[in-house]
Length: 316
Image 1 (cartoon, rainbow, N blue to C red):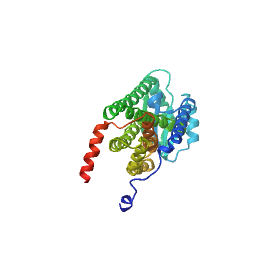
Image 2 (image 1 turned 135 degrees about the vertical axis):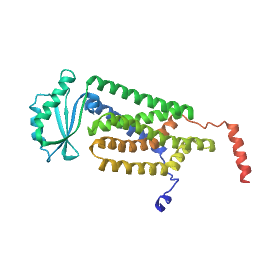
Image 3 (image 1 turned 120 degrees about the vertical axis):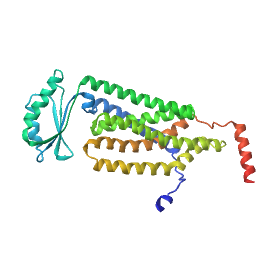
């Protein structure tokens, strides 16, 4: 606690002087994310691409190579297997079979028959049709877009249009960068991952609003200052709060990633990345974008002068 209290609250780092570097880095990050998402693609889970998902626990550490050969010999099309936490937990993904539910159930029974007595427990058996998967994907895109627009409208009403534009661009930056992250890592992209993206947007805008509040207050207080200097001061004053909040959140997420199991590993890793990129965008993207959009003090000049006179009387 004593160490936290000793952290400086007003560093004098010239963030605005480095804004061109931050912008160039972010543009490069976004371009790479889009290119990777288009060329390499995302590792869509059964939620989106449709198919059969079977999670099993074997009586002894599984021989993945042997299981893969036996599953491939069943003639079910594309089959992928992977360890799901411990050596006895295996996740089997099977492409959708031609036909309706009857054909899918027949494929599941065929797999169970091939596995035989070496399976101690069937922990999960799921089937999602491609139509349902495509609808989930479409609804997920709508949810993300509407969430971003809703946040932008709120910021517009709460502040001014410059703040809304900056917040929307910073959030879009976070979402695209997170999609690029999943394209690089090839962690499964499913409904839980999509929920993580929306959570990242919410966390990032919370950080951004804290900085924006300080920006608005300082613009009102120091109308005679250059906007460049006010923005720099606002970032520095809120920097320790932003870093400490992100750090404590990361501690919980790292614990989830290490000890939460395979089911939420992709979700927790995506959130870890999202906290890092969201903190970065709140500091290095959102506020510099305010400068680019030409933000000014919302307080009229005569009101500012009256405020300065009142402040002088109080001091005297």
